[in-house]
Length: 146
Image (cartoon, rainbow, N blue to C red; front, side, top):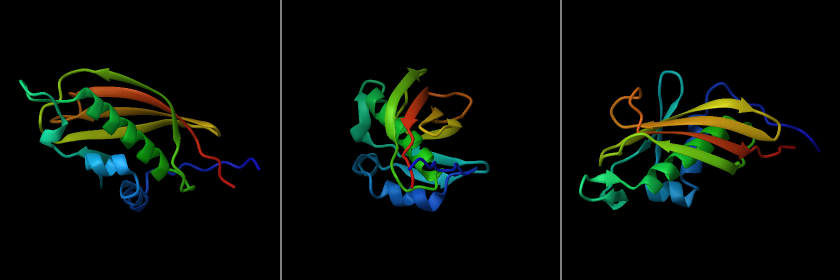
């Protein structure tokens, strides 16, 4: 009973939309997924309920972290043949600059998909991808397939 799921070159957008409608927290955040030239871009639409610092106003860091973690999990599930949600092992996040009240984007790179563990790098930005608001690395327990 040891089989593994194969990673696709690009996440399946249809699979991502299916999961976006099934995950309550992704629905609460309003996360969207859109295709780009090479991959999928995840979008966190601006919303006043996510403000953490009203004097700037800036988005709450927990919202940014949750958005990036959800984007990584969705990217991974969209890249697998099996339709099972991976489980987070660890998540390391570096905040680089405040995220203002505007749409926030995230892209993921699947660094390695092993038999049991997958590694991803996530970048979140608002205006330019080369000026990220946050970067993160995540490790997930890869779901077994039969």
